[in-house]
Image (cartoon, rainbow, N blue to C red; front, side):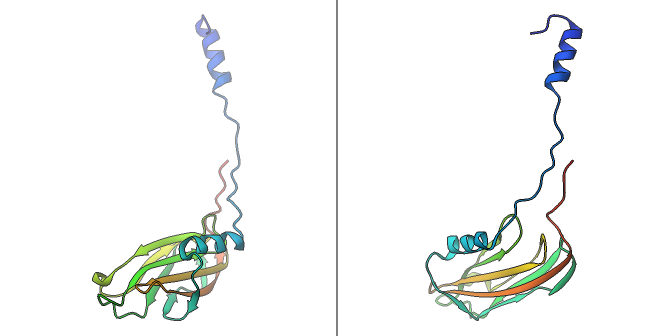
Length: 152
């Protein structure tokens, strides 16, 4: 331990030096998307239909992309949507969100805004009360990417 003030200050400046680090986002892959989907559905078959994904096909800014997912379901005590899961292909985290519903929800619909790192595919999957999984996918072109800020 330094014994004088000058030695102490010299020690803290040396010990407190922090190198400047540039952080780059994780490069997502289609395999990561597939793994994230399999973590939700397991080995269940994914069927097409029943799910509707309303998302603009072209967005100027990937920081705030409006999205609505709706599922054709009567939402009764015996026939309802258990959950809706949304995934993306190129963001650092492939799972955008998980929304849990039930017959009390009234209708099977969720709306939110998401961030997209680049032009990519967005996938919405619904799990119904009979444990079947239904999906839909949409391609979105992003002119100004999000999620890619650099820290210097």
